[in-house]
Image 1 (cartoon, rainbow, N blue to C red):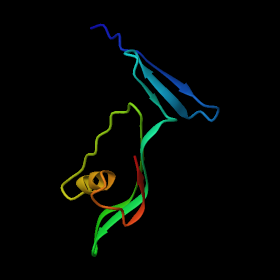
Image 2: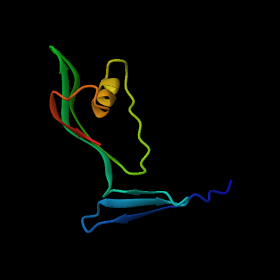
Image 3: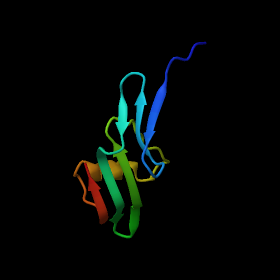
Length: 93
């Protein structure tokens, strides 16, 4: 089996990953954030549906939300699409 899929990456002065480039010309630039969620919480009465979620999804990045039933996946997407607002924190696209 011949594996010709090559990946290159660049790092900044602190050794943190700045960009990942794949052979197909697709790159993930850590400077271009598409979705930014910061300390987001959503409560429905006394039920906490999402608890202090923080994440960044970058341009061209493939991302998936996985979790058991009731983990807050749909609530997170509903907040990102504007159906609900967060109780605390921020969510930006």
